[in-house]
Amino acid sequence: MAELGIPEKFINWIMLGTATVTYRFNVNGDYTEILEAKRDDVLLFSRGDQSIDIMLDAFQNFSKSTGLIMNPKKCKEFFGGMDDNTKSAVLLNTGFTEGQFPIRYLGIPLASKRLNIHHYLPLIDKIVCRIRHWTAHLLSTAGRIQLVKSIVVAITQYWMHCLPLPKAVLKRVDSICRNFIWTGVTVTMDWYHVMCHNIARPRAKVILWLAFQNRLATKQRLFRLGFLQHQLCELCEKEDESLDHSLFACPQTVGIWNAILHWMGISDFNNLNFDWIKRKVRGKGARMSLLKAVIAEVIYGIWVLRN
Ligand SMILES: [Zn+2]
Image 1 (cartoon, protein in one colour):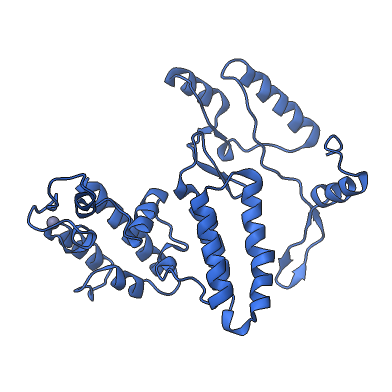
Image 2: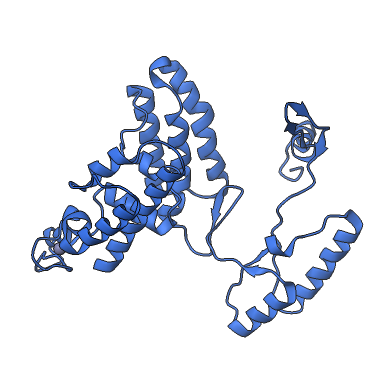
């Protein structure tokens, strides 16, 4: 910070904020004594040779002098350009488990490749979930602007400190804020609650996200764009493959939904479509959470099947 020419006064303030974090726990109404923050996540980089041993030695020394001991079960190793034999030797030596990218570090996705648009979904989710909790009709326009300025912009800026945000993501954030400020409508995307707090795998959520926006490359769509000669459904070969047909109406997929929804104890799905999902998936609780995940995974499964 000193090298960047930040005045000493500011540096002291920042250091005060980052180096003197304390916690207090409330146990059955009584506060515990103030505890100093002593734990932090650390990223260490090393070459895949004896440097690992040297690093582990240094870590042991650090443990001896500070009393901070690492838990191998909570440590993960990430490899780049390494053969399987060396990998397993390193894993055996350190006792760590192998991690897979992308991971989230301090809320930000970390990946070895260029991030895809779906890696930014947590940002959109976070903003939408925040805005949903603000009661727009009780706020003046100035109040809404203030909330957007202080909360949404701060969340977005935190991400922008670490990553360049793609244009599409910025546009999405803009449109969410614009809708909230000018119309008071929390989110115009009425399917967002299906995405919010959905515990399905990211890849399933992306397909669900695209499906809700009718952006999946169905045969009907590709046919219209001139990429295909016919638009017959891949699975039943009887009807045109629209999104509704392939996901909900095709005889091949109806069976899958029947089985899964019966298993979930749901019987009112005669007219299964996106509107049904939006209506059905409302509310909180573990059951709703499971239903959201199941819907996302079934749609993903069907989409993979037809591909
Ligand atoms: Zn079909």
